[in-house]
Picture 1 (cartoon, rainbow, N blue to C red):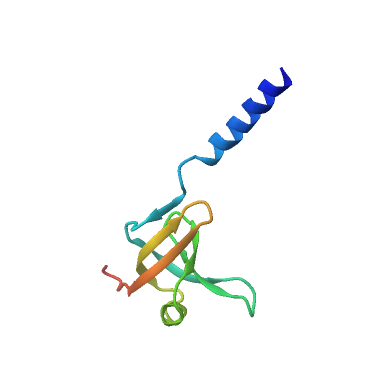
Picture 2: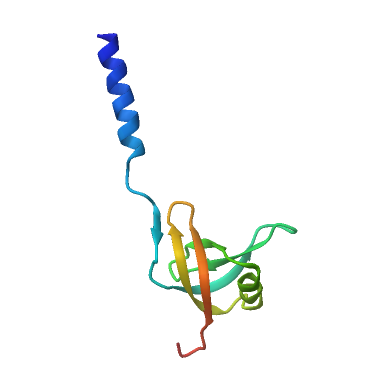
Length: 101
């Protein structure tokens, strides 16, 4: 009886680890406003979408500098990966949008 309960617990634990991944590769572009989050010296660029969701942005140093320069502006981001649980985007390209875009 105890052995069967143990096997059931192990099976349920393994099954719960096999759920769908929250990381997507090659996601659609994201559009929103660039904001800076965190406290100095640990600030980082983030994207605030129209619905108010804030995504942390992971990128190379040159892209990060572009994002910091675009603070407060609307941008469209191309992402290689999206982690919806951690609210994190891995940015590959930044396009600063004009008022009409």
